[in-house]
Image 1 (cartoon, rainbow over the protein chains, first blue to last red):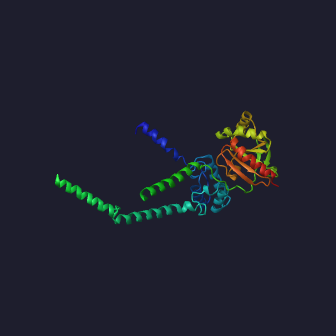
Image 2: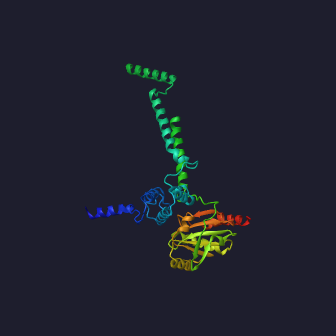
Image 3: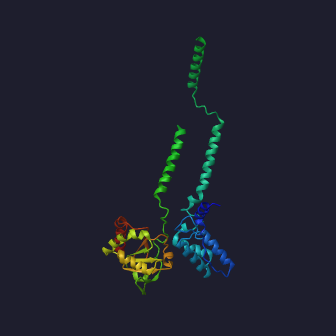
Length: 155
Length: 176
């Protein structure tokens, strides 16, 4: 591989710098809960990353918070509640269905339905010939064509 | 006719949504803490770590909690505005020195001026988490009952002070 390519690949791999700190768990269930939680909490600094993916300082603090709360025997729901009380639903990658988030959840369905309606509408229209020329105009055009043809014969 | 109207309507709908999208700031996350009691804290004072300040010390007053750090670039932009606000002596400003190094923080205040009645050190960022801090600087307006009434994320401009903070503070101070 050429050195330039290597450098390019190294530059592209910056987002692989995931959480590296070591967390010791006695209980494998808690460890699973830890990994589940940090994978569904959003990092509010780099908003398109979970706190598991993000290297931001806040993400580190939030991972520590999750770890400590698990060690204190807090349940997953309690931890999620703790986070939403402070950061709002935005911190959840899987926000609850509420009046405020309804558009978020129903939006895709609405788009699908409107797409289907448009497809059906277009398909139906396609069946009937799309000749919108009114009869009177058609007669006039026919007459004009006839005179043109007749003229052609005469010359 | 319909052939032209439908694409035009679609265009208008899309343009409206995109225009709204441009105006919305995705970094502006509505705080769930508004109109809720400000989280408790008890933190050492910057420059005098033997002393601590806690929420009860501010009870009965309208006060501002400004989250700042010497490593925070936009805090530098905000700082003169806070200095000006402090000179008016209308409201006590408590600085939450967030995840900072005390030496650097004191140097920063020495160079740029200190608008804070007191700054407290949150070196581990735990109080920051309780206040839902995600983008320094942040400013909270807390009322006499210790409720958070307003949160401003990002640097406060002098326009914000005139149009938002001063009227709000005056209103809250007139409350019982």
